[in-house]
Amino acid sequence: MIRVVIADDHPVVRAGLRQIVTGQPDMQVAGESADGDGVLAVLAGTPADVLLLDLAMPGAPFPGLLKHVLSRYPGVRVLVMSMHPEDQFAGRALREGAAGYLTKERTPQDLVEAIRKVTRGGTYVSPALAEQLAASLDTRRPAVAHEALSDREYEVLRLIGAGRTVGEIAAQLHLSPKTVSTYRTRILQKLSLRTSAELMRYALQHQLTT
Image (cartoon, rainbow, N blue to C red):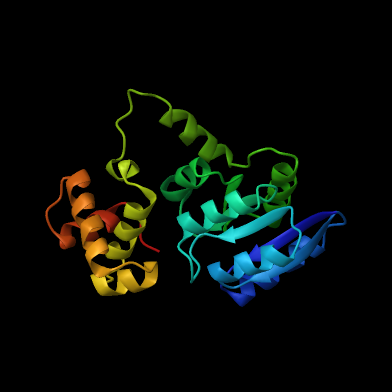
């Protein structure tokens, strides 16, 4: 029996995922969470095989949460689910150790196939994403500037793009405002930009905001 933990902050989405999972003879819902902090609490007390992890939940920021889950629960396969396009987030999630990436526009059959595939040790990506990942291996293809950012820098960029102030970002990421400002300076340098307004425009142009 495949034990699945569902992590999504929308009750309707969790209900839909629960119905899909429990409708399979070889699967069961082992637990649910509505935020990043709750994911860790559920996994601490519930044996699980697959974690369906929403990319944009309240609580612990996604990159750090994914790393924490994978380091503490190496036996759990993480299948990331998101409303965001594959070409914006999937590559980074997979590089960080996720076993698969599924946009929420995919069918219930796709979800079931993805769960079974990652449980068997495979990696689930859509055919379109597989082509994109293959193309990214071509060293002649110019790299996207934000791919050079660290996970924390990337998260700060996304929040700046969403219009958050330095103080708001510091509170959400549990950092000091000075540290956030340092990350902002590094991002500006790496992206060859000058102002927060330009950072915001960059994030919007590349669809990096949640």
